[in-house]
Image (cartoon, rainbow, N blue to C red):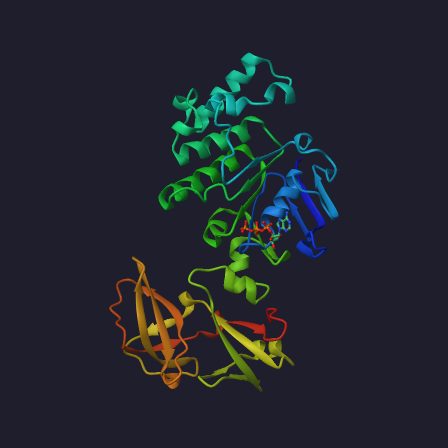
Length: 370
Ligand code: ATP
């Protein structure tokens, strides 16, 4: 078993002037044996620091990290049986691919030279770089260097992989291919993995589960679909999904939400969930908004809208809308419609916010109201 557990892990950096920065704040998460966990969040939220603590490259201020049930807080990096893959690949420029992959294996394993050479060849074949083993990193493309870096991690047969934005130096097409390949590889090898990215699409498509971090604090851990459908709070709701969820600040008036722009009747369950909250943020995803160019706004969940901008995205378009009622002070929001729909800036449409698709958050605490 190579379960990886973070229990109350905290990192405080002290700057030269004595100022303290809490980079990681009381993070607890259990990564199951063989699981692919994606740690995602905006720049500076503490992802790399978390990973570096697990790797042993950074000390832990508080809390405990354990691998396969054994505390590793104080273990030197080389003794952790964890392999890390960096964004920069971190290959040795003066060594060949084969030397990069085998470097240090003599000391850290029982294997003799022939066995190491066989292992490197097998792994190079698995990564599709068998033709490149005698080249130096400078003579490889970015994608090839990245395969070498992954191969170097795999050859060590570690208990866990840590990957820090390993695909971010690749172009979009190669990145998409490598995502799938990496996922398949991880599944075949069954090695417990933490994968760090700031890209929510990467998180949604790759992770068995995703852990969303903001300002050092873990906001939610769940499957991609759980985080998408039932975000714990406004931050997660806005971070997961592309284009982002739309938010409207509303006042509570009995069983209705009211703003300058529109009034939204709540279902009985929603009104219960809102309870005593003073203000509510109503969230709706662009893809959940129904658009009808020929309709009449004759249900209480339908609104007259004005199309401000149409942004083609290929198979679908993102349209920027404003409420007809607020045209003097336009506040746009987005809806996604099929690319086949012929909408133009200036069109009038009816938009539906289906009651089952809306999300409600307490305006003060920003927590979801279920
Ligand atoms: P990015 O996606 O930009 O790499 P990140 O989520 O990986 O960001 P970290 O690099 O972990 O974020 O940084 C978290 C916070 O800790 C930031 O505020 C950063 O400035 C701070 N920090 C990181 N390393 C140090 C350090 N050695 N000394 C002081 N502060 C640090």
